[in-house]
Length: 387
Image 1 (cartoon, rainbow, N blue to C red):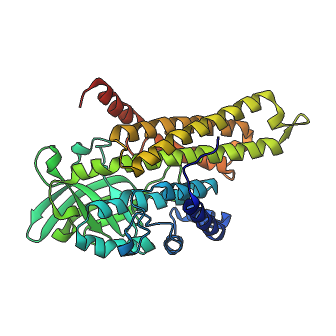
Image 2: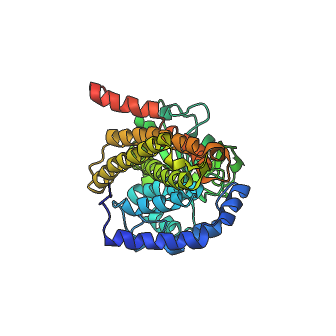
Image 3: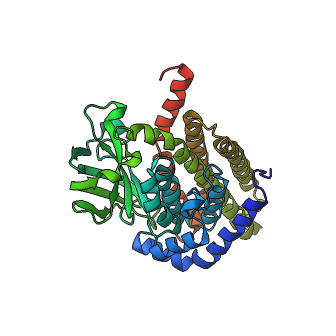
């Protein structure tokens, strides 16, 4: 089945993305990112110049102004993941889906003017820090706190599993600013690279996404000025996170569908080229059955994701529907990638093959953005009428 959600403007943009990939997403570049454990700043600047990041930044701040039309972001993910560059797709996603939206939707006029123009160009990279060590998905259980002082806050604590944490110039950080664990006890602060007491130094060794860093951050008596309080209002942090989570989960669903499609295409090509016992691997009945499963599952994933993309464009994507998309697509992604590895045989286990990298990269999709167990509970609570 052919997808029908794109128009001429989208396909013209796809051409720009493919041109960028042809110039910057080479095997040499991917090896360089993996060796360094991060995407180099030159690549991010080139992406900004090409218009591949900052898509939701309003035009008045130098962006594309595609605030609700997430189809443009989807095209970026489709093409970058198809090129085998999952780490780059992840770095783009942190900038555009996790960091930028908080400033676009909730930033003060001064915050927008200060950060958004440079985020659109890639000059300033952002990250989002929610998770405390020991708190996991329990956001209300965090210990990282910011005490009000004259002119700002004193921030203490730590965050872990922070994607793009060491390269980020600004980190939108979820902190306690009140007592207890009520929603109004939390706020979002912008922490800037180089602030005294802010340590971004520890990269975590991961199973996948080796070309894109994940870090532990620590804060020791870091002074955060009042102007770095997102929206300028204390006690809004929990609500602000809840507002952006549907987009984050939609983005994971898109990445899952894109990875499944890429894996399917790689596997079809491999089995048509590879021979065993005098026949193409693609000519064995078992192979044909598995390829049929992969193709059909991927098409069903896109049908579901595409409907969610249109719902998001029309401002109708609920938190529960985003959770459904996230957990269902990532479970199907895992099935497709596992079949792809199996049909590659021994080569599916070799990291020089993109299917192996995609397989290890995909494992985290069922964990971050809210584990799939939490997604099911969120949906189940809605079904049961329990809030």
